[in-house]
Amino acid sequence: MKNEPSSTDHHATLATHLDAATETLLTPANLNIGNLQNVLGDMMSHKIDYADLYFQYSRSESWGLEEGQVKSGNFSIDQGVGVRAVSGEKTAFAYSDDITLSAIQEAAKATKAIASLGGEQSAGQVNKRQASQLYVAQDPIASLSAEAKVKLLERLESYARQIDPRISQVTASIAGEYEVVMVARFDGVMAADVRPLVRLSINVIAESNGRREQGSSGGGGRYDYSYFTDEILHDYAKKAVHQALVNLDARPAPAGSMTVVLGAGWPGILLHEAIGHGLEGDFNRKGSSAFSNMIGQQVAARGITIVDDGTIANRRGSLSMDDEGNPTNRTVLIEDGILRGYIQDTLNARLMNMPVTGNARRESYAHIPMPRMTNTYMLNGTMPPEEIIKSVKRGLYAANFGGGQVDITSGKFVFSAAEAYMIEDGKITYPVKGATLIGNGPDVLKRVSMIGNDMQLDSGVGTCGKEGQSVPVGVGQPTLKIDALTVGGTA
Image 1 (cartoon, one colour):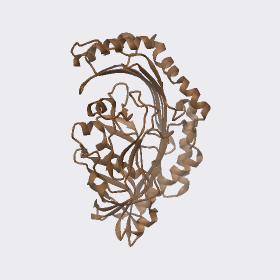
Image 2: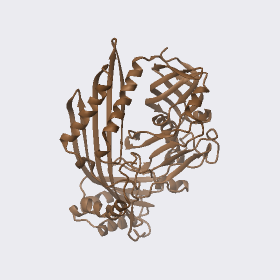
Image 3: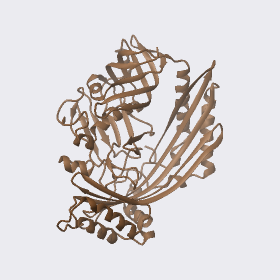
Image 4: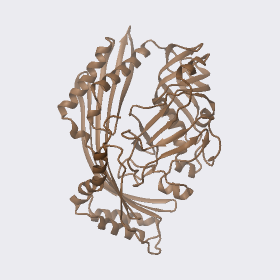
């Protein structure tokens, strides 16, 4: 995989994670680890179960190109600290964008409201936990000049226009983020991470005979901007143009119950939304998930194994550590159709008497962590995708998805297909537009009758929203055949 950390990079970066975070976050405020331990020790002198401090420094930028001109450019710097105390099911949280000892102490005082005075508890010995190295600790924003970033977008636009004269409009954007985080916990754990993140997107409009259709593509990961080679730019342009041109020729989608084949890769967003959220610990602890109290039971067709894996090098959804300082993991959620576990943070794992899975995530220092997905995907089956298509008498092939909505409690979902085709007598025949997939996540899992051997992860574009917080994620799956799914169409 491109930009894999070398063994030298690995050891050097491990040695400097905490040093970099200390230099960036603590030293400018004349803070040290002893100051943090004193604050946590004072918090733990009250009857609480858990306390932590979360420091964050972030720099981010974005550039937008439209019709060959830079139409937008943003740059921001943010830093702050979040202070959290947990007692039973109650969480008290305060934050400050001023990283000073007095601000941290004031925030800590605000968290004491949830606990009554109790016996003394120690904040613990300091344990400097190092994050595993899944990506190079580099600053993407500094990896290219402003002029080079604009030229990169101009090349992407040019490639798209060269593919087909029917492309009438192109917009492209690039975004980068450099983040340094540090966690100090009541049990003495000190952990830090340095997180790069880049993303490139392209949207095109094709026109023919008075008809206009759009297509989009993009990708990225935890790299710097050198990831976006000419080969990758060509690939993004080709995929966006292909989608737009396919939709130019698309007929109205039929409606009704039919066999649906989902393509590999990004269509895994349906699994993420309709199933993945239902496997997060907080929803299951509260009994509001369709999967509550079902561990050990068959919840999917045999052959279906779904994992959440935050440990894949350089992936958009990966983290060297979660936002509580715990190592991320490869967690098996469903194994051969049997529900094996949930995605957990510390609070929900403790209350449910289950293992912490390293899935505590927060949008920023101003937000509380909660159990969230990282890279969630279904493992390979055994069927060649062409054999899956051949097995369908009449149905829909959904190659790519747009947006969707899900009800976590019931599992009901509605997804729109961005690129779809009819399957007739075992062959993909003509493209259709306006197709929506309507169903129930747990029910869909049981209707999967064939699993492809072509599992792909998405290209690195996913962002997940939950309770007002957005975090980067990854999805993936092989080609899937689903029997009798409701398709909403326009025909």
